[in-house]
Amino acid sequence: MTSLVMKAEAEASERVPAQGPLAGARMLFVAPDDYPAFRVDLVELFSNHLVGRGLKIDWSLRPFQDGPARVDERGAERFHVARRQMSGKFGALRYRMAENWLRLKLAWRAARGDYDLIQIRDQPLWAITYALAGRISGTPCLFWMSYPVLEGRLRDALKNLVPMSWPSRLVRIVYATVADFLFYKVALPLSSHVIVQSKRMRERVGFRGIAMQKMTPIPMGVSTERYNIASIRAADDPRLAGKKSMAYLCANVVSILTNLTVDALAELVAEGHDAVLVLIGAVSDFERKRLDDRLEELGVSDRVIFTGRLPLAEALGWVKRADVCLSPFMMDAAQQVATPTKLVEYLAMGRPVVGTVHYDQNEVIHGSGTGFVTAFSGKAMAEGVARLFADPQKAEAMGARGPAWVKANRDYTHLADVVEQIYMDLLDRQRASMRMQQPKPGAGNAGS
Image (cartoon, rainbow, N blue to C red; front, side, top):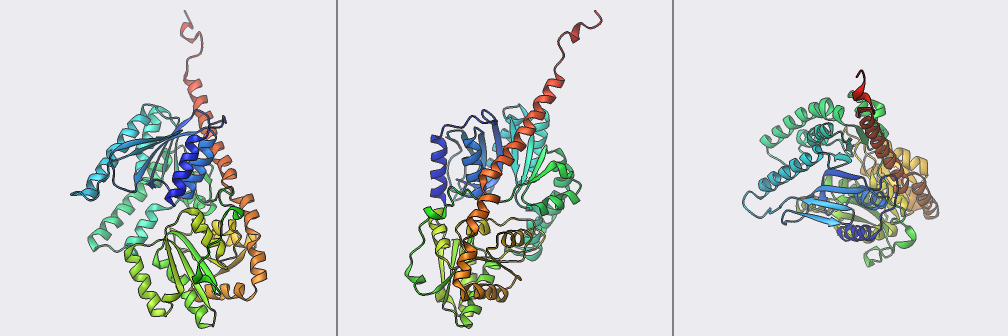
């Protein structure tokens, strides 16, 4: 999806920023995401909508490819990039040291008051450093919790979901446990505001002692201008001709979830459906080997299409072409607080969906009437898909409800309004505090 991001950045750099309430404000945004960014919330919500409203952003992201240390300027956005040379000796360690040094320098600038806002995303321990820098300079510092990172790392280590040695697992378990204490007892209390991804996440964080009024849920969404079904051309691939098709869209294909979609395909084929499954997203060599073994075992190797990572318009073209779109999602402690983006993307493309039981998916699918919610199993998903395959007219009618629901509930134009108001409230409070600290005229002459 990199080409879409570069296009969006070019458009943003050519656009004259709107003179809104945030015009002239500069924010430092530190996140563990790839640069160039490809995640929808970074590209659409920030680089498109909020920059379009006048916000200037200094980004600290992680370079996707090797390159020198630099600052890339694109209009109102500056991207601070650490040197990355993974092919060299101790490349990963040298990069991590360079990144840490860069972020310490940015924290120093934040402590000097070079920014109007500081925002840290999914970096629990860096949040302490930047929150302290904000306290020194009087700059509001927000933490954006798009994912419970520490819970996720602990889960991966305990269940060995990411292959690693026992010493590595032990180190990760200790880190997640200690960092969890520091995050909830130090980082979040020091933060000016906390943005969470869902109402469920807000409740979870509130149970850990963070004031509810200090948190605002901002779910994942899409920009209906870009996710416009009329402007997306459906994929035309001979492997789909005459067959019923299912699509599963994700940034990175991971077998633990993809196995459910594969199992659903095998169930449908066993029941006599001439079906294919399209897996849209990047697949690591390790995951591809696991998936290939699973497909061979189930006898459906010739019924799965791997597209790899695609520019957004092409990925959505596959979604638009599919008869049914799938959204399996885990309900463990780390995932149950999420708001799956793929589900909203499917709805924006007018497709009927089958999703597994999950707080946000239940709310979205039942609220929009665009599909079925099933148990977390391939067999249950297959039953939901079979119901849609059996009545194509009903399936299309359900899918057709999606675009309007997305525009009313998960459009980034609306979400940007909420975020803009959070920033303005923090800036207004900061200005009011500064006025109160200034000596009143004549106060120095009192009693003379």
